[in-house]
Figure (cartoon, rainbow, N blue to C red):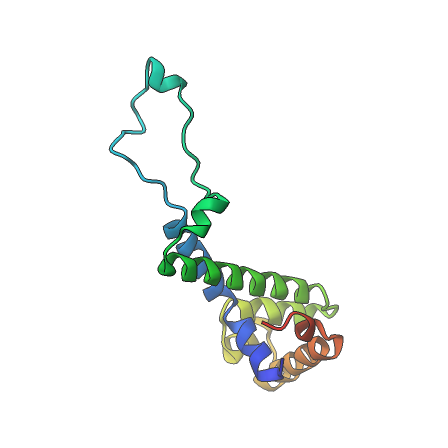
Length: 145
């Protein structure tokens, strides 16, 4: 993966997290079936097992194309998020860690520079060093998405 793609991946971190939460909410939603959560059940209904919101292997096989695309996107985003979380552990410089965190939050160079109290040029240099470290480690090549 080249430097530009790694930088784009870092900046898309917060988007991917929000999208995974949104897609999981749609994908794993539980049908209400008209029951109120505040009403107790009595008799045989109370003793019967309740359905799970997690899909079984049979249900996954029977999904329609839209659900399958949604499932594949969830898995792809989660893999990229894990890749970035593991990349953070490669950083040793505290300033690079702060820059990485700010980038994953979607902050611009200018706002990161204001936050840390240095120039945009210093931020750009530190960011380039950080991404070069990722490239040299081969972390993103092994797990190329």
